[in-house]
Image (cartoon, rainbow, N blue to C red; front, top):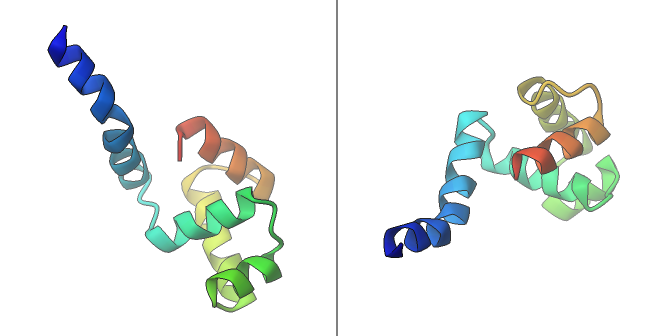
Length: 84
């Protein structure tokens, strides 16, 4: 019982490390994904992260490919389903 409880406490940390690695999502792509999930536009996301709007669009395109999502909303939905 004690082992199961310990594993349950560790699961969020393990999940946070393994799922992005499984989909090969970079830390910058994760930042873009979080900003988009907060409802920011590409321009607002770029301003928030201190990068160009075109760079945000590039990361979004990579996320769409990696998560097999057709658009920005699908990226956020898929990320939420996966626990990203």
